Image (cartoon, rainbow, N blue to C red; front, side):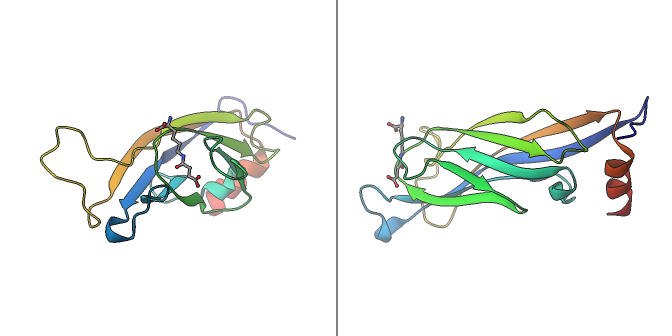
Length: 148
Ligand code: SLL
């Protein structure tokens, strides 16, 4: 592939989790519903660069390696506990050969000393903003970014 020297493409991304307590519907092992996601931080389509995303869950889940093959790159589950989720981004072959591993700690419960008690109405949201920089992009990738 032809690569463009002295060009960089920055892709702003946001990744994290949103968790809802199930309140009256909570059971011992399913007290919360949550979604882990990675998306373009300004709503650009990550599918231009990202081919698939692998979410590695805690081994207490059935089939803890979850592969999402197309956008939106997100996964919803229910559970009872907090743990670290590994989020692996696999890029299209003309974007980058290397994978990118991101790590996010799933939070279900509001801060210990928070004035707000747990409620079904207000989810716990934890997000990280980051930028993926692709140096010397291929012509094909640049064209997809421009035409999108
Ligand atoms: C803890 N270190 O002890 C953590 C582990 C694991 C949470 C939390 C499984 C749900 C399911 C689930 O929520 N695991 O079995 O479907 O707090």
